[in-house]
Image (tube, rainbow over all chains, first blue to last red; front, side, top):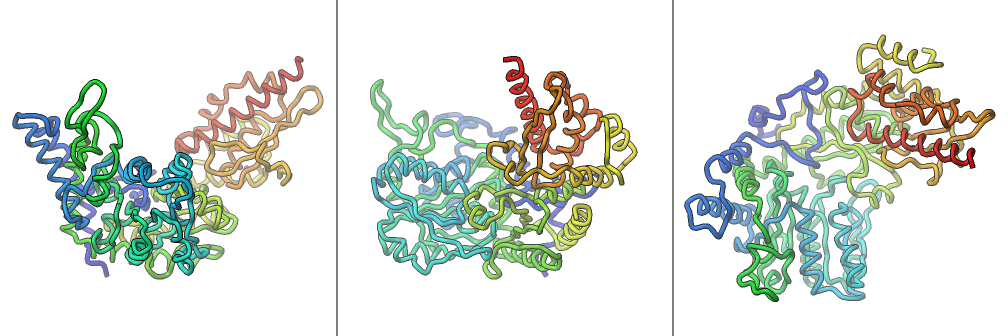
Length: 406
Length: 144
């Protein structure tokens, strides 16, 4: 049994509603998570009491806003065990964090023929930025293959694939299949081969304990909204030494130290990469989210997510004609599946009529779906506020839907 | 249940009679299942209608007296049902008649919108757009 009580749902106002006359069953957490009252209050409180622009002001409100913003930087550093808070660059989310690395580090470090090693599991946000960079620099993309429906990485030729690789960038947990990749081992081997490493932690941050020093990665990207925080705020962990050598990302206020009409000197990292007025309210919300998650405990959250995924998988496998994706072991809190002769779109539409929110489509992993030979899959993804009885309700709804469609 | 229908009014009446979502969707799915099949060769990129989360193919076939038969298919049942609804609205009419139809009014009459997500509505709109574009092309060709 999970250590997390069902009573925790009371913290989430959005979870108490009915959809189409049925209690909401929210199983689209890999897309975004619901927000606890503590996060909503932190945002409200920031705007009611502390709102001002950061860093430059001399007045009290500006001091408070700066303290809130920089306090979150410390908090994020602590949350992922970054050595120093300067390692944390605020971004809009994982996508912008990866684009920042491609645009800055990538531009000065990659050239014609250099290899960017990715995996076939990657979300478009950890694929398209590298395609754009490859077009600009002449670098080449290479992919670690995935082994069929199990969705685990085939690392049998990893050494060979590292040949010529300047960067290895991969997801920690696959958003499409739930695979938890052996990131620490991959980073260690990549590092030994002289490659820089980036971990896309969009699905793992807030779902399991994260320690960038234990993972041994150079960059790590995460989104606030996928871990109970607000949308529009995320973070890039970037090792200080790498930041020093990276050119600016965007130009504007905050990122400069001295500006003349024809040239500028830039602020020190990480501020050099944060042009313009940042998302201070988002940072306040993110701080509250991280406090909230730590109070529950990341180990307990991971155990709960995983238990629900295994339970859902077990219940799903009772259906005739179902094909379930993802690994048996080392699975995050999501399950993707399809039914023979039933389109995932029909499933999701009819499930929604009964208040069950699931995701369908290619989950921003079109090449992976191409490889699996399916245009779309249905996905249920869990968080600590989901319950076994919700999984039971989902199965009951699914049975009704299948009957209607067959 | 017989799903042979001649007019949108008849369809609207049937929808009205079927009170809950389950029977309405069941009915829509049955309509889709009775859709005449489209040749596999026609399920091609050139006939593909983009904008729907499912795959949709559509072509317009000119018949005698300027009438147009719409041939369309999808890999999702509910989408096939929506195609069947569009066929009731458009198929067998002339290009001029097709272009004069305000589809929105008819779809509102069916009160389908309440059950369709914005994404799904975009998909339906993409199909309506394609019918109109193809009818427009046929009309232009006929007047040239």
